[in-house]
Image 1 (cartoon, one colour):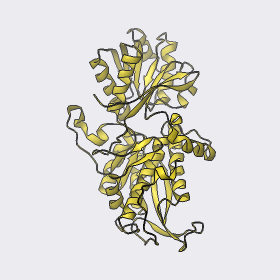
Image 2 (spheres, rainbow, N blue to C red; image 1 turned 90 degrees about the vertical axis):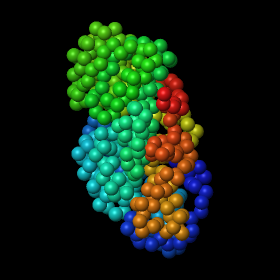
Image 3 (cartoon, rainbow, N blue to C red; image 1 turned 90 degrees about the horizontal axis):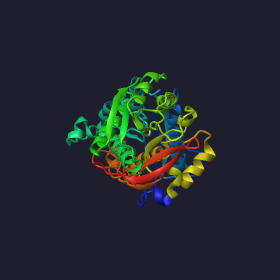
Image 4 (cartoon, rainbow, N blue to C red; image 1 turned 45 degrees about the vertical axis):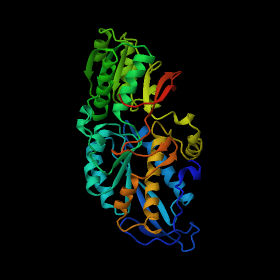
Amino acid sequence: MRNRSALILTTVLTTGALTLTACGSRDKDKDSGDKGGDKTTVTIGFDAPLTGDLSALGIGMRNSAELAVKTANKENTVDGVEFKLQPLDDQAQPSVGGQNAQKFISNKDVIGVVGPLNSSVSQSMQKPFNDANLTQISPANTGTELTQGDGWKKGDKKRQFKTFFRTATTDQVQGQFAAQYLFQKAKIKKVYVIDDQKTYGAGLAASFKDTFTDLGGKIVGQDHVNPEDRDFKSVASKVKGKGAQAVYYGGEYPAAAPLSQQLKESGANVPLMGGDGMKSEEFPKLNKKAEGDLGTSVGAPVEELPSAKKFIAEYNKNYKENMETYGGGTYDATWAIIEAVKLAVDENDGELPSDGREKVLASMSKVKFDGVTGTVSFDQYGDTTNTMMTAYEIKNNKWESKFSEAYKPR
């Protein structure tokens, strides 16, 4: 949570009961204290892996989104509106994500969707949402092409889908930041690069590689692994023979943990570095040799931000599961939709418009507020304007922040 004054736009909504709309249904709210007693229920969809290997990240995201919805209802952030969260499990599978997208679209009460975790899953959801004018905002998707298109590397940036936004910065930013940190701060000049061939991992590794070589570093070898594998002895043996001072891995923690452990057990006693998909509290639990490994994540460490103190306290009071890497960003992503609903209602004389999805989508580009992770707003591509990045290191079996910077792409 955060202070009401920091969360809510200064505009005061016109008082009055809301009418039944195409996006939103009338419910009797017995506890609202509203004299009329009627509130319009507005549903925010949520999609992430809630089961399987990546469920720790997904559950932390779901809890954070739910907390934002509960806070908005408790504080009556949008007068006459009761928010509801509809969480769906995509199992980190694009095909399931595509099915979930259709479920959200067919539910006329859904005004926007938070998620998913995986960039590859998002690729199956973006066009259906775009066709339905249904706002999507991810706190975790970092694939640069999701917003700027495949031509972004050549400077040909084109927004792909008007409905897609994110509170996470891009792989372009994250990969470059990691390369700069490793080369300039950690003084590592020789790196072996490995990726899991997925949209997120391959994009992150490519961005890292390009920047690291531009800085004068040497890529001593490159390999691809199957993210479902847990036996990496073969690639570990290759790394050992190449004289690498570190390994950069583009992928997620379920494979990164055994890869790191097997690298060290093979005799290649060098740190493994990865991105936000690796920087999970589960990583050191799954890796007996994690000490000294490095990671990057979007934003400043939430636990160090004054703006996040109330959110963290409220989260810990309500949930037993760790909020993980994307907790603060998910809360802010959910709140961005809530703010867009508020703007749409305000611009329609205190009533949710009959074309609610279209109006909420139009309001997203105007959203700006002080959130858990800092100022939340979006550029012309739907990307966050907050490019703060942090480098972490495993110390005593926990991630410890080492360096933060508002990083601009080279």
